[in-house]
Length: 478
Image 1 (cartoon, rainbow, N blue to C red):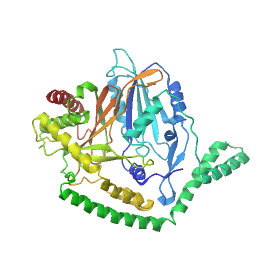
Image 2 (tube, helix red, strand yellow; image 1 turned 90 degrees about the vertical axis):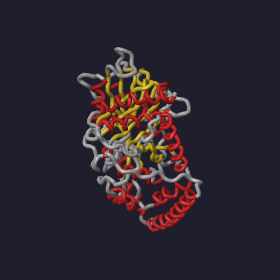
Image 3 (tube, rainbow, N blue to C red; image 1 turned 120 degrees about the vertical axis):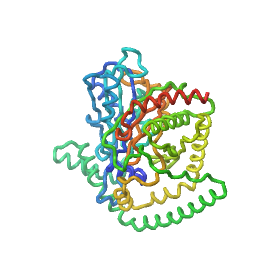
Image 4 (cartoon, one colour; image 1 turned 30 degrees about the horizontal axis):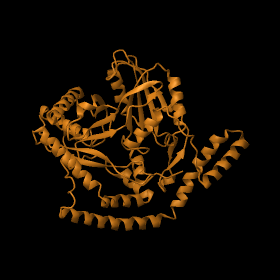
């Protein structure tokens, strides 16, 4: 069993305080398979995907970092949701309810929701029913890229190698002892062995962590000095113009709420052929950011809200150690709403995105992460669980989010039905009450909106603004 890294443990502990789950929606042609058959397909595939056969195991008093422990797929991880009137509008309403839920990674860190026979789904032929699958994943298990890989593997019909459980010597001893105890008691040997490991491993991890506590503190102090030195070097590089300056903080707007977590959710999906967002010289991410800037500008001006500088958080994938499941940094991007010319605005957004990436990619940025990675588990747990997240800061890094993920070619099927498109819904929090997802699959892109209705009372009006902004921006850039 492997320990969670400091970053992933932070995500896991944070999930007990706020919603952080990933929701990956995939639309397939519905071939009429019943829920029992669909569940059996999921169970058969999951049985040979190692990352779908683990759960989190806490250690006593969080003395050591939580552990990943093996587990089996359970029927409760596949949920069929029959709709009385299975229309696309009712499906969207049902997804809205899902977004308010969370998995428990210490039970099972993922589950799959199925909606069958959906009518009027975008991108489908008239009368063609859709099977909508929503994979809900704990952020501790995967970031956006890895979750997309897991979904593709789960839904694909390619052959998978059999999973070989690699147990440590301690786990092998625990399994043997547990199996002998089960045999003597007439119980199920494999289940008892896994239970025995789950009972003994946390105590062993805690026992091993205690003697290393002073060493971890010393390592944290050493890395802290290194981080301070790295910050000075970053400041020198910035002062001499060798590195772009950090993004400025900005004041929150009505889009950021009042510091409390959303009590309700609304969502919409805009389906876009990839060609609709393709323009010469700009990525689809830049085109989408420019469209979001136009939609937000018009939304705020229409509500009589003064339009300040608007910024968006854009997650950027980074390279980390193989055992880190969350490998990204958030970039704060200026949406350039003060620029009326859309060509110039898109160019400014693209330039700021490149600038933020340059700074975020600098090796010196890793120094602070190294400090966190060395923190003893009890200290990091205390910091995560006591940090004030219900107070809206006076200065923030962004007013909304755009998460952009290319989920690869549309070359797989599920239950005999071909995949049409995918979508995603970045989580809301106490600061972010309006997020956007840009997800590509094959030649189709989706722009998703996930919002707190208290911040965005009329999501359909905003969706219409965003839809028209996409065409307006694309036309201007062409």
